[in-house]
Length: 197
View 1: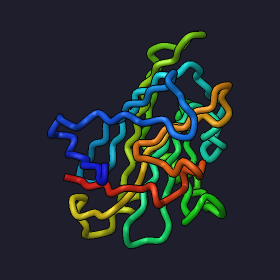
View 2 (view 1 turned 180 degrees about the vertical axis):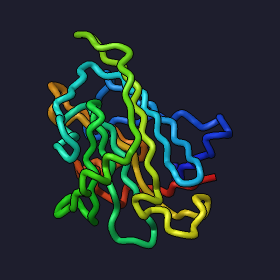
View 3 (view 1 turned 60 degrees about the vertical axis):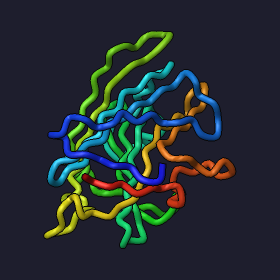
């Protein structure tokens, strides 16, 4: 997939995307995501099936990637840095910016609190967890969509992930193909074009 088309939420026909395992096999984990937009928001609905539901974070900007966590990375094509929006199944988030995995700047919690998100846990037992987690990122609030720009003119790249680095059985999943020799979601070479239509 060279680019991802994201349709207006009012069209009601957005494609369900499936994340693929990378680096290690993870057949017990399945992540589906539907991406939509309105005039200024990127709206993501994740449906996650996994064996273990981990919910340890207690604050925004905690190490939420150690929990059951889904992540959206976004980069304007005309900027060197990208933003990572990492959402725990606790609904606490880590949001940062930078141009690599290292030296990232975390956003102030007051910004993060503006992101609308929710979780619905449908099943959680010793055999399986099944939950739906939603978030709506206002691209204007995060200066991804600039003043005077229409979302349909926006030129960004990104990727979507599910990680489990602290789980009994490690798992890493990505929407777009990852470098098999580099275990690093912060590799912007693996970002692809997001097109709002």
